[in-house]
Image 1: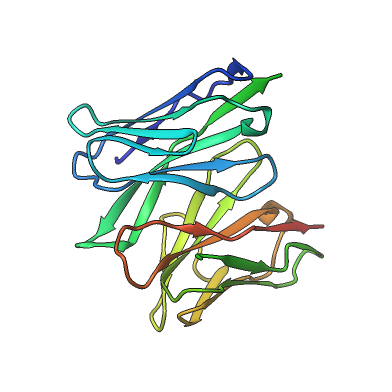
Image 2 (image 1 turned 135 degrees about the vertical axis):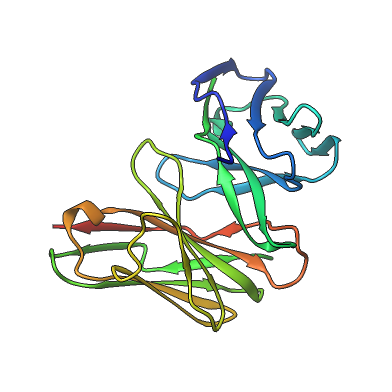
Length: 116
Length: 117
């Protein structure tokens, strides 16, 4: 069973703080990892993708990948109330050698609350 | 780029009727489109994967005769919920991956809320 696990939270941080969201996955063959944000009642929105070990930064967001530990994280700096949402970690499971036709396995999501 | 649209955004129907939902990639050609269902307070559940010109691949437990998927072109996939019942009421979301690139990034449509009375 290929699984992706996240702490469901809620994770509560004050405005301006760093929010740290974590995710572990079970399939060692996974190569593509994604973080999506989902506001209540809306569909998921892509925030970051990461494929190599290490850090990847995009504005206030930093994704971290450690394939040896099978661990992906998302850091949100200077958290804003508008960041309050559910954050979904997803891992691509390729079909054969194709990632574009492969499916995403989602974690249950972590609810982030940023308090003013 | 990478915009995906869905139509309609909301649909209310009577039990026993069929409902068709369209998913379009607006600014790219989609290798593959995916259909998800999401119930309140739950994560996304993949229903099926469709590729242009071929039959959809359904996930275990999803009735292919009830949820008909047609992938007519590289920019359009449709999901038809046949003989809908109240338990089919849910948030249906499609996604698509680009034809080229190979990273597996899925871009999601805004979703369709189905309420079956």
